[in-house]
Image (cartoon, rainbow, N blue to C red; front, side, top):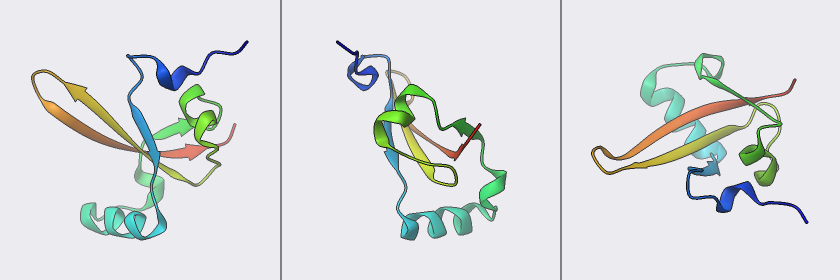
Length: 78
């Protein structure tokens, strides 16, 4: 029996950023993809999405005080 980490209450929502959204994101912040913070391809939440190196993941965190915060990370291989 294996445990699905994404069902745990402390794991934030992770989703893959589409190519069209990627271009808008990078242009909006005037950055290159290499400027994004990194997340490993072998991170448990990333493994369940099947993302590979070079993909961008959107992480949405809920907070009682701040509402919702959105973070973006570039997926990297080891």
